Length: 204
Ligand code: ATP
Ligand code: MG
Image (tube, rainbow, N blue to C red; front, side, top):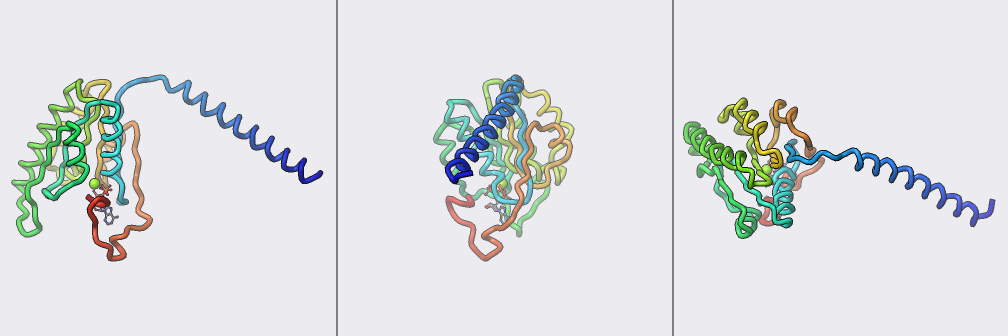
């Protein structure tokens, strides 16, 4: 067989493979007909959980959809995505207890977590909100600051078209079981492990 024939045959094989793949994808697209909000969990020890959550909020806002964010973080440090999205009209509730390692106070943390959750519940019952990001809520469940059953119940009874994103390490199994999409971010490398400082615009 000439080189030309070989090249032609390879092209044809490639085209046939692509057509077969396209047929499979088209079939799956045709089967996915249900329309409703979904529960997404982004968990794991690698970097990219919150950035994924905020990226999706930006995506929704870009479509003029309404999103709301609750940040279950103890610190009150600056955060580029918050500054940007608030300018776009996205309401935020930041738990921020002004936490430092020296002034750990469990009661204050529990009170702040419950307050943040009260706000989350309002948004999780509001059909006008298309997307709710519950950033770092997994820790509130690990520490038992929030009642798991109540969180599950609230997620289950949210408006049909509303999507929710949960981020944080070690997400409780009951939440991942309920979720429609679960991604685990796996750390293969992190700059910090090589002594590189966390930086503005990359880490916050
Ligand atoms: P990001 O906000 O960058 O998406 P994340 O939400 O996946 O990170 P968190 O544990 O919430 O992860 O991150 C808090 C901070 O710790 C971020 O500044 C992040 O860059 C950093 N970080 C995330 N994963 C790691 C890691 N494996 N080692 C060291 N630092 C990390
Ligand atoms: Mg995070």
